Amino acid sequence: MAIMHEVALLQSRITELEEANERLSKRRKVKKTRLQKGGSLSVEQAEDLMRQKYVGSQQSEEIGSCSGQGEVAQSRIRRCSKCNKTGHTARTCQRVI
Image (tube, rainbow, N blue to C red):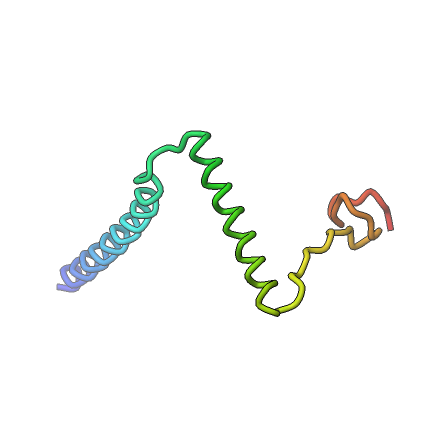
């Protein structure tokens, strides 16, 4: 009787795990198919998309600066935290401390 009860519990656990596995695999498939639906891009199409994105970002910066919000924040040049020089990071710094 105890063995039958244990088998029933194991079977229910197996079905729960199979359902969870099925849900995860469907999620993974959805992500991949969403990327593949557009098909492959040619070089010209990719360049056009990059140009459109660049023009859109320039327009948003111009709108922001014209609306009286002040200057657009410029990104600073990154420097090494050990020697304060540009061109590398603290991980790749040659200076020994």
